[in-house]
Length: 276
Image 1 (cartoon, helix red, strand yellow):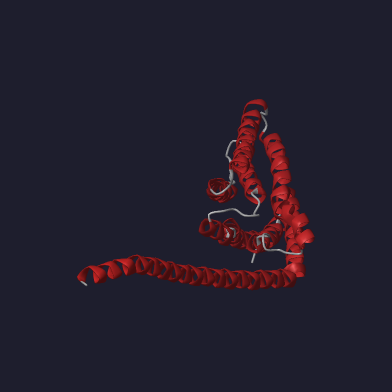
Image 2: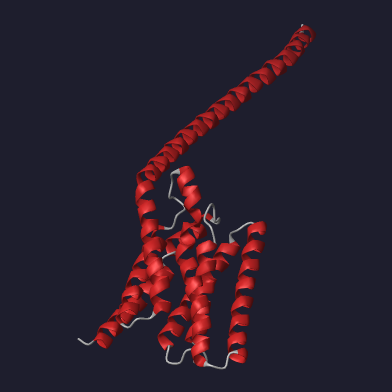
């Protein structure tokens, strides 16, 4: 097969993997949806993915880089899905975190709009537009790939990867690797550098996940046992309360009965005397 054919095949595979990357956070958001809380999950990866996809949408526009429909459509879909994730995150966050997320998202959108306006109206040459937007997208792409590492400090401190999204890390590695191969067939540094960095960062995330996986499972098991113990203790306390309440009720009924009996006894004596 010719290099172009191989590149097209890899591009198709890359699109499929990119779609998998966009859907990889689904297990995390299903968990958030069920618990109605974001818990210790961080919005950084999804905010980074949103601005990264938006920058590549600008890069793929005909006024910046003609004949880049693949880049435009793939990243347009990625931006749309990222907005859905961010909306869910905002919905189940507290007010302070909600304001912070929306502020960052607004800044990102303003930055992308400003970038588009500047290159369209101030940069006449297409080659210069490609260079400027390509460099910006390159930097944002590397940041996006490294965003899941924002929880690295918490992972090391707690020795737990419970809040480190595994499927997102795996998808980052696979996506970076396949697009690096795509870029190297016909040397495209704007694709090769960020995606090569992404594959490396994804590999680091997978190594960290594997390192702390066993300790995480041990912690989860200990928490489950503790919850069972607490549930049993709570059930025992509830049973004791019910038993004590029942005993108190019986005791109060006996007291009332004895008091009522002591009142009736004089009446019986009076009746007996009067009949005599």
